[in-house]
Image (cartoon, rainbow over all chains, first blue to last red; front, side, top):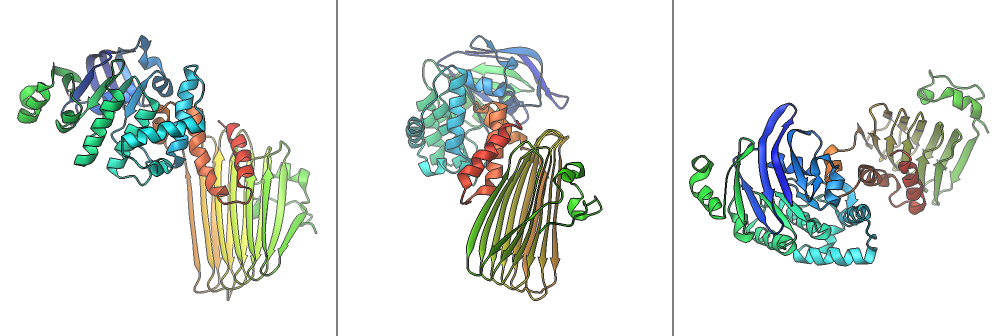
Length: 246
Length: 245
């Protein structure tokens, strides 16, 4: 589904990713762990197409398409979802309005009919229930006044509504208490653990992986994948630290 | 009644940013008087949305305890000017909600003078401007609190969003206070759309123009919230906005 080959980039002239390669197949859940500053969030933003993240080498193939040539909204329509480490507040724009317009923009670009207001609300309610989020919160402006945990759950509700093929989740577990961590973990499984979908989890800790069991674990350090393994690698990292493993 | 017959010059503060050539074609401006009697309530929406240059000159007098709600959408042709003078008697309430939306080489301006002539009157002004291309949007707003007008509450919230670096926003809220025990506040900001917010919306599938429109819609909604003609004004504003993106 996703093939990253020898990807290098820079931000404001500073090289961050230095020849990163990674392949993710449908049905797989991958976790990327690594020390601060290794380039984990940079990888997420680069795949999402954030302005200022200049690709200097390599390629990314997403289901047969050149991902790096696409605008951020086209990447979303092609089935990519980026879960933000720090979801952005948008004053005055309600979640419901934003998500309905976003979903219908995606559907339009895929040649599908727009979803009616009623059908959309039904879908939104279903996903909000899944993440135990009050529907009233979705009527409020996007992320404004939400706690850290509420923002992350709102991200997962968005993911449920938009129903992507590939989710790249950047530290979805940060800022979550124990209950919210479990709810988000279960949400990720319910929405994304399917034969035709895949997940790339970026995390510092084993605790999210207790709920969302990865098939593969990678260590990102110095802008490259320095080691890959199965779920046991995460446990090894937790015990011995990055320096010992990488 | 007409305004002074002589065409103003840039030396006249209230016309400092005006398009005088366009103004000359409209001069002299007839002043439109609005009188709201004591205890009465009134409202007015003024929409400049045509292609031709347009200028309006409103003179509003509010009697004791009168309440008036004025909404302006200034999005018209090459030149659009709306001047408003308001005089508030004891305990009167005045609210202005205005949006200026311009692109190309448009010159748009809203010039207000709100006089609290007697005690305990309240005025609030919310002005939101969105400017693209080489457009210039100006708000000149003076609040005068006369001697003896104690208990006055005057507020101005002025914000402008520049969509292009070539657009210009002028914002000058002014207070002239000749009384003690008054509450007057103004806030003023000129900025650009939040790049992080735009990327966030786009990452969910909204094309850039749609993402901008959504954010700007929220921005100008503050000018028309709770207006008697909120829907009409919002629709007209959205139409003008679409032309800027």
